[in-house]
Image (tube, rainbow, N blue to C red; front, side, top):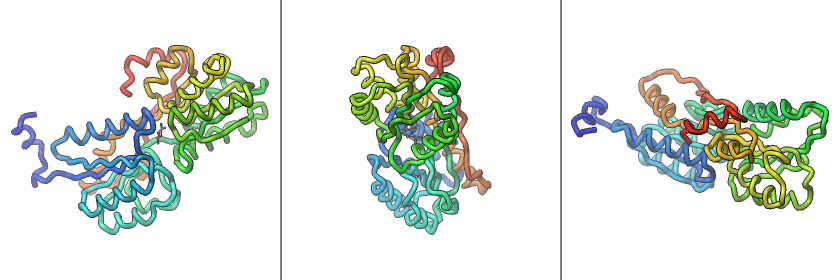
Length: 306
Ligand code: GYE
């Protein structure tokens, strides 16, 4: 863009909309893709100015960032809440300051809907159900199936709901048994560590259900190091749909990834523009997503954006 074009695109009063974004951290490939989407969206638009904060997976850092944004009188705040609980006080402060807050990708404890404008993100319960559906289609209802569940960050909505959707879907199917369920904090390193530890005790496992692809990829390494074949001896289910998972599926080491769309920057920008234009927003702006396995995953790989 030339300077003239940028001027032509600028809002009439010549004032940029300042957006503060309180990001969780850099724990996964998904998170990095979301951060890139937000930065690209706002940094490429001359009508916006982005203030970006990385909390290194600590809620206290996110709360500090929000307080800084309030003091700076930003026009809107985006928050990806690391855990569900503990936001009432700081979100009330934003509300009292008249700053609209958008929750991105993860939710907060129910009953606090008046503290934010909209939640933009996925249906994690549905993702858990979709993971279970792939598994029950694969194994049926006769053979015993032992499952290791690698849970996401303790207290995160993405972990709580992916667990709930999955567990509820199999609770009446007695051949499915979750033999071990432990947090791997959504990281590859911890996913590997947890899997490694469990394989020392028990190798009679048919399925690993990981709440994200990074932990699934860590578990794949641990399984290989234990002399078993991931994707064959133990079926691997992940969530997110990051490129590395598609590659692992193509290599036969992973079986399925339930997509969770991280490219939320454009939806956040639209929501901010809408609220500034006085429009009524939906409380939950859902992202469109799919489930990938087998040939469908291999075919989709070249066009994956994250
Ligand atoms: O699945 C995981 C990330 O909140 C939906 O957080 C997000 C989750 C995503 O670390 O990889």
